[in-house]
Length: 114
Image (cartoon, rainbow, N blue to C red; front, side, top):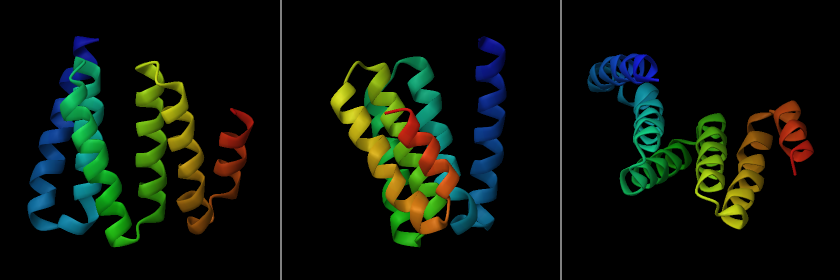
């Protein structure tokens, strides 16, 4: 597991440098990766903070696919915390931006998991 965390940190570092030049394209991905990183460490507070930032930024930029991904991953995060109601709610909510994006197959897959 440590090997994967190290690989993730390399990606975080790369995205951080890309954010300085191409903020719109990489900042959401950077926040998602940080949220996942903190989640892997069991740091609930920081993980939640970065999921929320990713969701808000994706909405502001109208990056529907990244909003859907952020909501979906935040939902799985809540499921891991045994907050089943909130987790399912977020995963259902992720279907809205996925639909706007045209990810009909993705929505169908998520609906099968209900």
